[in-house]
Image (cartoon, rainbow, N blue to C red):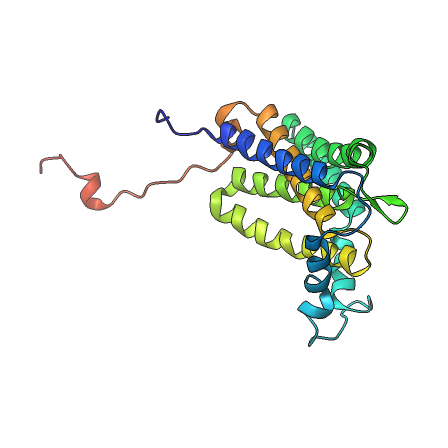
Length: 234
């Protein structure tokens, strides 16, 4: 370890705290408000499936649209099922800390969003408490855990691939929420920050220093014939 460089754990803590700080700062600015902000109005006008995919019409699974087909994959119930399934799989492999990471991240994200944060910030959409989005908190927490697991197993390339694949159901779920006006865009932003921040902090808490990446397969170094005979006199 080179001195002065941040350890993986300190990076997790720094990014996790930054995400939660963003969520709290945004929530304080929205506290008690019942009307959409300028950012909400812009998001509703521009971040919707009709504007983004206006020239594309069709459905593969009978959901009315492609977004309707994919959005159930990015729902809170699907996220919880994935988290519980991953937890059971890792528990069966006796990787109990990984099981806790998979289980706690989405469940605590949902519980904190719906039972604590929404009441603390008192942000309403109609008659319902809206900020932050519990739906988005769950899906972002599960996606963050999947990226961490991918990095642990296969390094940065696999993590980037999993992150890109995770964006598909998350984006569909977000577009569904915005199209149906079930949440303000700022609720979604707060949910993304909540789920991501909690998952990163749980990972930092459960794994000391480099243990999170300890499962990465070691790279084998191929020795060339010249390297194999280097220093050997014939």
